[in-house]
Image 1 (cartoon, rainbow, N blue to C red):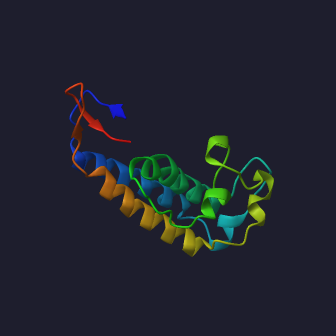
Image 2: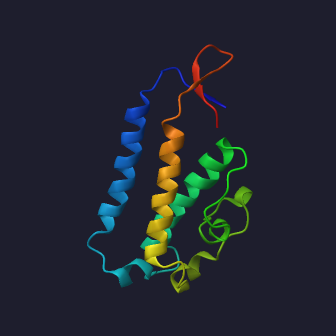
Length: 139
């Protein structure tokens, strides 16, 4: 449970989240579809993987922790898009991320969109009152 000392405006929180997520897509606008899968060197993951990884992070470390019985969008993504979070489970070998042909870029965008909707639903929920008397977000 995280206690916060300010009663955040939930709409501002939603807007900030959406702005950051939109910026990630804007960074990719110059790319052609083929560019999303190129891995130029073992230590640099493809854009498609990066977009998926951040989405996976929200699923694993926010939604699944905060929402009892949370159902993952696709269980295999927990393996494919984990980077170095040992406590989150096994990981796909980093130097081979550019060899993945699936999920497609279209599927990754669908995954992001669905997870973003779930995050927004979560973020706009009212804060609960903690035993400290301060508002808190139960995660």
